[in-house]
Image 1 (tube, rainbow, N blue to C red):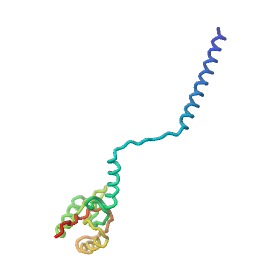
Image 2 (image 1 turned 90 degrees about the vertical axis):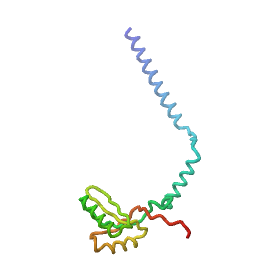
Image 3 (image 1 turned 45 degrees about the horizontal axis):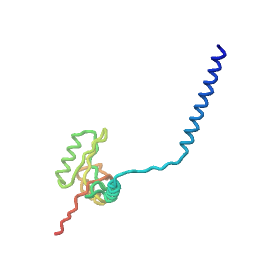
Image 4 (image 1 turned 120 degrees about the vertical axis):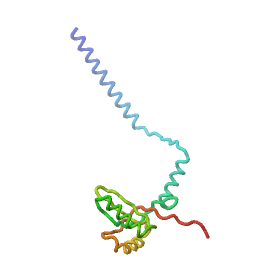
Length: 151
């Protein structure tokens, strides 16, 4: 009886090995075949992608978020001082937008949306009597809307 059990164990081991070898080769053969991928998509996706590429090149539909310059007029850790600097700037130049940015631990006050560095340098020169330690920052700006009326 003991020999019959050992014969069954031997047959089971051989059969199991053959099964795994057959499975391995079948999987390897299947993975080597080349297939074809078919992409099914809505035609509006291509239109949207082309429109987005066009908007990125021109800076947006109305020119929003194009590259430009701002003058940083204040840097400090105190929020109240940042708001005071912004208010002081707005008293002298109410038509120029200001932005308060918080990068831990500093508050920064930046002014203007200038397309060229020369425009930013002109403002920086005017501000020297009110603010010290200013510098020009290149970043994405919100340029003013262009007047499209033909008068």
